[in-house]
Image (cartoon, rainbow, N blue to C red; front, top):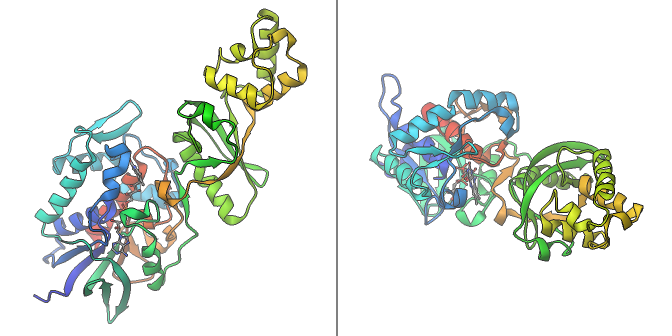
Length: 414
Ligand code: FDA
């Protein structure tokens, strides 16, 4: 056997690449046999991203996955998800010996609560199925000639009939996904739409809130306004941190902020701390409270609907005396409080960067892929899977579902 030749080379042994290699190895082409499958990864330690995912528990998928949970070409995303729905993920993991449990939020985790269980099962099955796993084999170049691919890695060159690119995006580069895959796919003739951090915390340029609020989380509604138009509105839990804001609702909204910044478009992030209430309703509420409890302080009044720490910090931030009895709070202070409660402009300075982003927005346009097989429409024999594609999901297991779905399609077809 020529040690430098394979039927299929898969570059990237993350979630998508492992799924692709396993499905490739287990799918026998009609009338034929499977040749050699080599899975190359640049990292010395495999699956680092799987291990850190879901706080070390790996949120494998979600029990209700819809195209609306993703950003990208929804028509294509719908077809990909339909080809490998959540039920298939659950059954497939069961076949790997990984039972999943559903949490109240709808997120699915391994019953062991250990991401390691997921990684071991995937790597174990790949090896069992005959996939050769070459770690510490970073690929720096790929080319195609005479119908074959040349995969140039740090120890030599592997020739392959078919190539699956599953090199991920740019998030958490120390795991090995540092964006080099985009260069490889460009070299083969694909486009890459601009990539920005998504599911990323945001840094505020005001220290005012951070010290007093760090660690506090509460329900808010966030609205992202780009060029004067609201492009996203969502409700959920916001976490105040020492640098700014995080938590699921901020992570989900962040892509709109980072994309607008990348395009040089003016962008603002507004928060309503009393979700569902209009400015007018809050005005009436403050008036009614002043009449019903004239001696109650402003901060105590706010604390009937908001966390106490937040009520205090907000008053201080607005330079309103938190201890002043409601009956004596000047009208302009009440107006400022109302405005801040319903339309608070977060002084966002920047996102927290790739080291803290969970995924990448942008990548290879889905239109350049045949969604039934994940085959490139431009390069015969090339398949793409996972985060390298221009599709990102919201927080909650959706990004792994994308990796399993695209990986399985690419692997079966390659
Ligand atoms: P991924 O990045 O996982 O793998 C790409 C692989 O390619 C890497 O192993 C890399 O080393 C290799 N590679 C890259 N370039 C190479 C080259 N030139 N040569 C050789 N190898 C190369 N999602 C979710 O659904 N539930 C969750 O709980 C979480 N939690 C989470 C936490 C954190 C901290 C992060 C950063 C991310 C998440 N995610 C998540 C997102 C999820 O981890 C992500 O969407 C998938 O891992 C993407 O899988 P891929 O296989 O596409 O890329």
